[in-house]
Picture 1: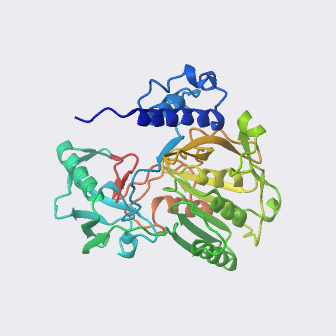
Picture 2: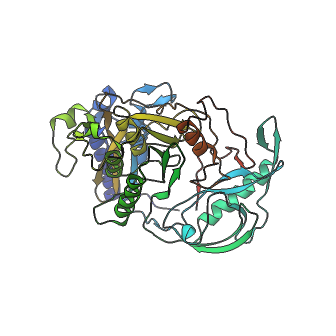
Picture 3: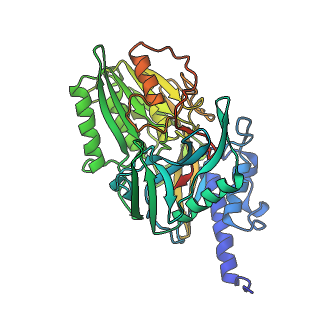
Length: 445
């Protein structure tokens, strides 16, 4: 039987909980909530079992938001600094797709640039037929009236279990069936890698218009000397030389990241009329409004610094309900200055108009507190339920690779740009469709 923790450990744990409470009270955007303002001695920190429980209680005390059916702070989180964590990955993201009228399989919907999966040549739309010796990953489905459902929940769960077990391994053997029905058998070893966030870039030259296309998996730090900065510089120089009229930015799986990269792209995309204009400003709680904290951001207004503008007519954004944070910031800061058209898999983006302050505590945890809102030049923020789309319910066609002009979301943007399609489109039906049984698409290897 495990012994009770000693007095020193109990004191250290209590200090962690009290410190978390203190910093959340200072940094939270909602720190004026009465329950959060109470003194530590009168709160739950002594009765809560863990720092995680303290944070969850604090988040639940932020204002109720009806669209969530819960507290508005669904963003603040902990990072455990003293826990061993593997930074290795295969860089492979999987969902479940229909491959015939009665069968579904795991299907690759995203491969992260620079990853072992990318180096091995795995691509979006590859069907996973076997993993680590298990050669039966098919899932019986029933499709009728344009929708599909799982027929055998036991088999479905078995397939998920096999994939989840594979995630925990240092290497994986994987059998694939390509879009052209070729078979491939590969072995991958998980490793740490520098992420290339650029999934695909292209220029589509039509008689009446040139359209640029840029698909981004994430927003990464891009210092001047970085490879990612150089890649982006080259892409935008090509767009400029090709004199593109419109730009299609594919953010359907982009959950955010470094605001620096969002600012870089906004400066490249915005027209000359945005030069020196306000890009965005911050909304802070009263404490942060009055105090400058060493080592934390200054929260000064951010202005456009436009260089070599592309002179675009329209920017089209391809989004899903996981498109969040810095992705939403990019969309929001451009809307006051140019025509934007949002094309969504469902109805909107995720809804995260806030940023974080990180506070390390006792070398044990880092508290990431939702501390500020981001507001565009028209004063627009509070898109807690996501930024609403102009064109909705367009299929994320995982049977086609990024940049394929016949892929449903990209095809929709191209059709609108060429004036060949109105915006009242129903869901496209293709051979291979995401049946959305893994709604968060959270199987990653």
